[in-house]
Image (tube, rainbow, N blue to C red):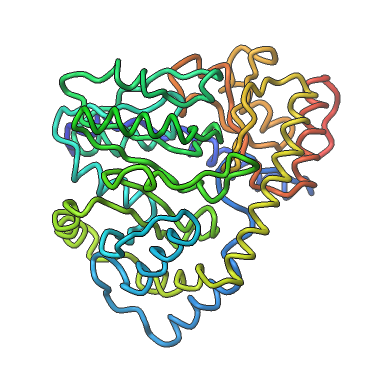
Length: 395
């Protein structure tokens, strides 16, 4: 059966090849009494906070499962607005907030709303691979701007301004970023917003890891810069609600009407029980637990980064958010794709090669997710050390 021509522009998600291979190997290893350590997929290992799970169960028990408004529950949108006021100092009209089917649903809606056929959207290289495909599904194409450690693997305002062309429609950024775990300095982000405003384009900022920022780089939302910024967020990372598939987006007032029409037609509404559960995310006890978990992710970063450096890998920029390390492995291998699969087979440690995330020498890089326990991170480093030393692996 013939598929639509747009599918030629949608690239494969290579991470899933790694996931499938890991699942197959895990079954064999389990039978042998051996364990695998998953440092590939970016999924928090905690699960949703207990209060969220309890609220979800109450919603199901009380049959609060009917359709909601396309924009989502008014109470949840108000809770999100209050959180922005308290955490980021942003006075936000709840009418500008849309609850979505995860951040992916938000990005899909945003691209369909803003990207015309043939339009160009600028984004950094490396980047989260699905971002290119959200643009492609809307008929546009992504133009990747090469970045380096000197700019923390994030684009600059000058670079965006120089790259802007006749077909450029806007910019899609993530701060902190997947796969690098690095954020954009607030001053530079302000300059970027000014360039985009002058060019008459849109600025989409993926902030799903914003609350998982560390140290003195714990930033504020891009919504503090400009009312025209479109912010994407999610309950998946900070609140560890990955499979609940719930996110949100904040749009300028003039986009509320067209986005309401689009969301209502394409999605009807986000999951109703998940929305009722998410109301408990903004309770003080849940926020306290989420903050405790954020600190644990920071501790894990401080364990795995020195271990990688001790093994001879390169970490040119220490991540300041999310739970990823962008690791240079050119001294250890010729191609990170083969390296990661060999490491998986030999050690049971699952890593993700750079092919998905970058077009600039992806064979030199892999991504490690430290959304795993400190004990497992230390054990993974031990196994990697044995592998590099050519000694027998005990797993």
